[in-house]
Image 1 (cartoon, rainbow, N blue to C red):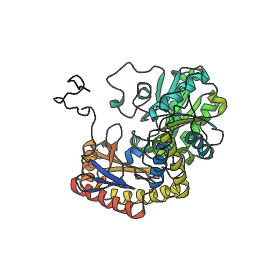
Image 2 (image 1 turned 90 degrees about the vertical axis):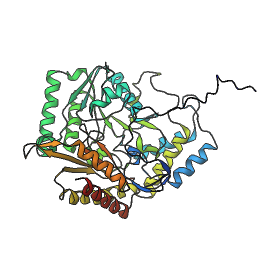
Image 3 (image 1 turned 45 degrees about the vertical axis):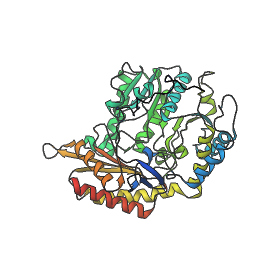
Image 4 (image 1 turned 60 degrees about the vertical axis):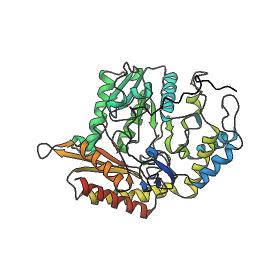
Length: 433
């Protein structure tokens, strides 16, 4: 065979897009559990977990074995063409952990796709155009998902026009307002009612969409009473209540689903992804069969959705979470982490707030321009995040102003690893503040 210069060129070297911004300089050689081992010979305690994805830790042996075994059977079986056993088994196991009544599941690849599927279903089911989201929410980067995202202008600027029919209402961000949680909830519910009176008629509103804990918006737990207020208004007006559990779900908050911190509350549609398969790309929405049946024929599908290897990994992930009591571990280790962070924060004036649920912790950095009003300090957060890497702890920033450092350990994290992480975080703070 003759190889021509049309097929192989040696002069050009491809690089990653310059629009991609690396949070750390680490190049991974291999990883296990809560640790990443770099090509630089250093070991890093990973409190990023691929932005909350590697829920059972890096390369959990049971997840690896499930994926390896599936690769010997079939890798890709397009699930609207032929069905495969891992997806049937995953659907059965999800039925055991999903809220009662959510008994129908549609699979996609990413959180953004699942969000868009949920919005499509809500609009089809109600024949209404409008979606109400809440300030600081993150729901993805694809065009429709970015239209729903208010966690920062970087997610939606520069490619307008965005999807129409999206309206934003305040989130009860008590620290930002300088109020109690109850006062912030009262305010946010009043403003939502005013929005429904002044701009977005209830009978034109298809859905409320919210995260149980804001992710990129600053790691802010949504107060249970606010979620309950949304459920009540959704019921009153016939609005679909959608919970985006992409980051907060699958045990991360110390309950299997983040919204379960609000008692007696069930969404109409639940969105899951990230920790679902310990690093393999798969996402899903769950709803009642009655609601899911209102999707128009052919409106759900996709080439790679419900991939066989990813589904097998998801089955193993659910089994590991159950067998190793990882939801309880997330709660216990989360309490340890939050208590330790609060002790550390007491030593540094630059830390204005520490909050979180389970293994989701946010540390907000501020300065005071007049001695009393906190002003976001993105420079301090960025400096601390970089310093933690130098101390062998991987962290990320978030928040609309970029002034929150977030910690996202794996659900398998141990007591000693949390203690080590806190020590390294405190050392990084001492270096730069």
